[in-house]
Length: 389
Ligand SMILES: Cc1cc2nc3c(=O)[nH]c(=O)nc-3n(C[C@H](O)[C@H](O)[C@H](O)COP(=O)(O)OP(=O)(O)OC[C@H]3O[C@@H](n4cnc5c(N)ncnc54)[C@H](O)[C@@H]3O)c2cc1C
Image (tube, rainbow, N blue to C red):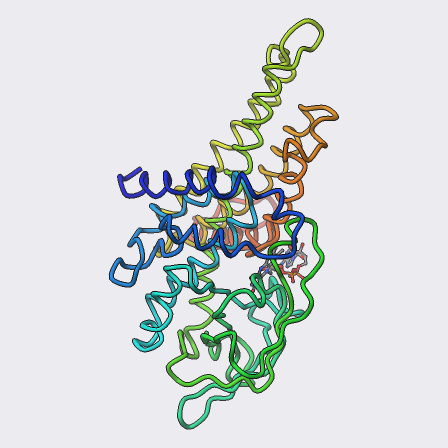
C-alpha cells in the first residue's frame, strides 16, 4: 500500500470510529440521510478521492482510494455505498464535464456541500441496462430535453446533481446513449416515495420522473455514443468498491465473532477452543482474504482492458462471501447473534443487498463467461469423440 493510500485509509478508519460507529444505529431507525456525516467525510478528505487537488480532491488512483470503502463499510454498508457513488459522480464531473460545469460542481462535491447521484436503471431495464427508454431530444443549441422514468435512484432527492443516462434516438442498441448532468433544482424533476427495503431506511432510494427536463449543452458529460461505455466504466469502479465494502462487513463480523467466542464459556472451555467453531471462523477468514485480493487486483486493473472482468470476479465472489460470513458469525453468537446489540443481524441484512446493486452476481457471471468464450475461440481444437477435426 502506498503512503497516500495508507493515509486515506487511516482517515477512513477515523471516520468509521468517530462518525459512523456512534451514530449508525440511530441512522438505521431514521429515514433522514445523515448529511452532517457526509460533511464530516468531506473534512476527512473522503469525498473527492479520484479528483485532482486543484479541484479540491485527493488525486488518488482507484487502487489507492478503493480500500477506503472496506473501512467505511465496517460500520455501515449502505452509507459506504452512497459515498462510493458520490465519489464516482465527482470523478466523472472532475474528469469529463465542460469547464463551466466542472468549475461550478467540482468544489462543491469535493467539499461535501453538494452530493452526487448516478441514474441508469429504469423499471424495465436493470441488468439489461441498454434497454433504457428515457429519451433526450437534442435541440439546435445542443440543449437536452429529457422525458422518462428512472428507478432505484440512490440518494433520491438528497443528491444535488444527478448523472442521468439517456437515449437520444429511436435506434436500438447503445450507440446513441449519452450521460447528462441534471441539477436537482431543474424544472420537471420529481421523485417517488422512497422504497421500503430490507435495511438502511436512511438511504432514500426511489423512482425519478423527468418531464420536459431541459439542460443546456454544457451539461452533457458524455455525448451520444460514449454514454454507455462511460456508464459501464462507472459501474466497474462501483463493483470493485462494493467488493471492498463486503470485506468491511466480513471483517467487522469476524472481529465480533472472535471476541465473543473467545469469552464465551462452552462445556468448560472458551468457544474459541472448540474445533468446530475454529473451522467456521477459518472459512470466514479465507473468504475475507480471497475477497480482498480480488478487489485489490481489480482496483489496480480499472481503466485497462482487463478491468471489467477483474471487477466482475471481485463482485461475483465478495458479496456471496459476505452473505456466508455474516450468517456464520451471527450463528457463532447463538441467540445473542440475533440481537441488535451486536450489529450482526444488520450486517446479515446488508450483505444480500451487495449481491444486487451495481450488477447482480449472475450478471458478473455473464461478464466472466463472455471473456471465457473469447478465450475458448483462441484455443486449438481437441479431438472430440464422434466428430471430425
Ligand atoms: C440498494 C440498491 C441501490 C441501487 N442504486 C442504484 C442507483 O443509484 N442508480 C441506478 O441506476 N441503479 C441502482 N440500483 C439498481 C441496480 O443496479 C439493479 O437493481 C440491478 O442492476 C439489477 O437490476 P433489476 O433489479 O432490474 O433486476 P433484473 O435485471 O430484472 O434481474 C432479475 C433477476 O434475473 C437475473 N438475471 C438477469 N439477467 C440474467 C442473465 N442473463 N442470466 C442469468 N440471470 C440473469 C438477475 O441476476 C436477477 O436475479 C440499485 C439497486 C439496489 C438494490
